[in-house]
Image (tube, rainbow, N blue to C red; front, side, top):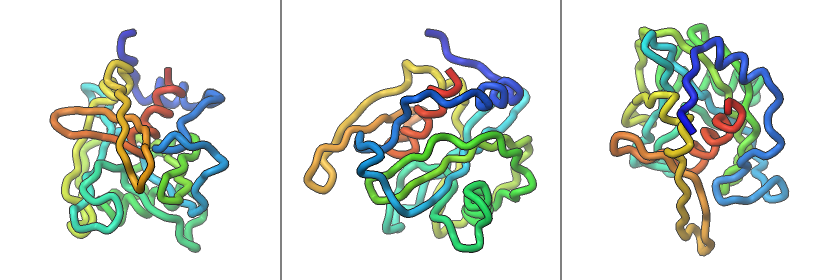
Length: 198
């Protein structure tokens, strides 16, 4: 199967379709009955370069208590003042990488993702026109980088792995690109995005 190549208009059109019945709900293979309860949201930033769409990621600093050093999307837990999950994702993206909310064209919500650590995460897909003038928060973010969307949407790049976490075997998706490994919740959300778009 050849990789899916889309522009922003094609992305918007496909995201408007009903989501498939089957979605990845947890990075350890669990379903809704073992779901997280703490609401959170992440922004899935799609950068609309003239030569093609990319997805923006962050790599978390190694001194953070949770998910240190991992590749992730900008995001975090909801706060009482957030009017919606979109507001949570946009606020967190501004705090973490200095992305102004006004620069983001919100396209869609992806299926909720339940993490092993107890979060119920809503991924928000947003399109951003370059140039980007980001100011990452050095306390949280070690690196900001982009991966071509068509690479992520190529199913030959979707791999499965497992490891023992907390005394139990966890199974997860991962995607490798230029020496970086995207795995766990972030990869699971990307698989859901692929299933909707494909």
